Amino acid sequence: MRIVRAKWMQDGGRRNRGAAAVELAVVAPVLLTLVFGIIEFGWTMMVRQSLINAAREGCRAASLKYTSNTALEAAVVGKIDSALSSLGFSYQEGDYTLTMVHASYPPVSPNDTETVTLAVPYSQVSLLGDYFNLPDFEIRARAVMRKEF
Image (cartoon, rainbow, N blue to C red):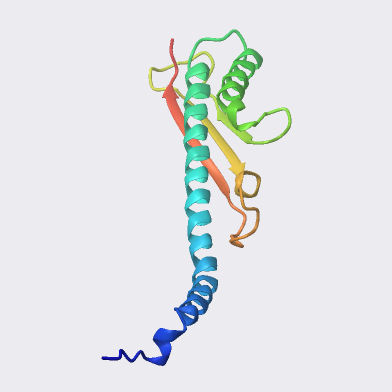
């Protein structure tokens, strides 16, 4: 008895390899964009969390008693710089914007608050540059604490 094979079985699957290459060429850009988007999103969230922690540290320093506003601002910038040093950000180099709203000095009521707001441009944080063509915006963090007497 003789086994008869179809023509497509005789070529050893060479046609399938060509189809796989075409499928890879179609799917690879979408897959890589998705993977890099996930990495970029994760990195941005990590930077945002670092900014939140730095704002909290700075606000905690601002809520303590200081002899002058200059000493207070130096302490806040020092705390924020040490918290953001792992990202390579520095206030002296203008990597981030710091806004502080001071309580009345000396505090007159127990509800006087210190507010620290940090902002970093997204273009400075992005790993992929302008690959996703997003509009430029700022990543912000804000902390508010009551002034200690």
